[in-house]
Length: 368
Image 1 (tube, helix red, strand yellow):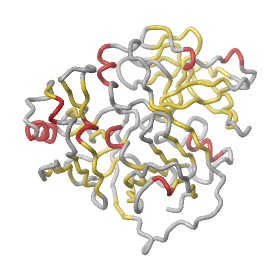
Image 2 (cartoon, helix red, strand yellow):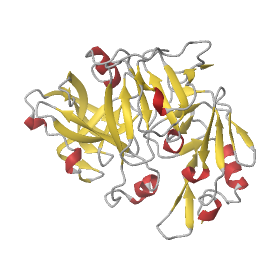
Image 3 (cartoon, helix red, strand yellow):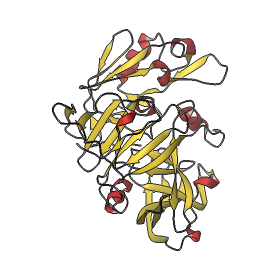
């Protein structure tokens, strides 16, 4: 889902000695969207899409309250796109009827406006056909973003809407900037925590939860892509990255250069990207190490492979080859589940640290 941008990346490690730790103080200008992993039946998806999402813990979603009726609409959180897109009554999702809890009802809102301008977007497969619209977005405590611009779709390439929080500085249609311009946050930035259980994740607008990661954040001066160093297998084989890498919650897989993918599969004794016995990758404590420069992130082998069907011995991988002309490699959920991910859209910086699974919380304002 990411449209990768070229950027010059200067990497610095945030250390308390050099840059200073954030002052721990009461901070209430933030918004928390609780996230839940989609473990529902895949029977409404195409065969290709079922394979794409199976066993990944993919498609973390939340519910937004849209319009004067505060219509709860389920949407997929996507850091790789920048607009909100929701289907309306009568819309088709994957050429069938959209899920009822994913549909927004503009006829029930006295504040809805159809801007009568078509807006087509492509996430994967066919384009999503929509009209630009505006309405209020409400929160449980009564606060709201007034007149937020989004796309109301009548033909969707997905089975639910997409909640894009990626790069764009238009406060009318970029949710992260809109929360700041509405006075709800101090900084146009967010943090993402994906917990071990299906209902433990959250998208935190305007804040950083210091309880949810280990050590200090590694800070990258980058808008979308970073110049990482290498990926290292459990037997110590290092495969250098020659292309930048970009991070995307809307990507259920890991897209790497062909030489890296070939080397990983060959090292595992797997021919090509076909099916293989699951014991090689699921019943092991082996890990990949992502050397990002100032920080290393370890990810279990089991996060990159999945069992084709319950009870079967056959497995397949969530690692695929990016095109030779791709500007960057796509790093999706198998990696992002292992890190606390922070993005400052305003100052164009990314923060990454190993995740710490805890119910505790210590939310502070952006300090870098």
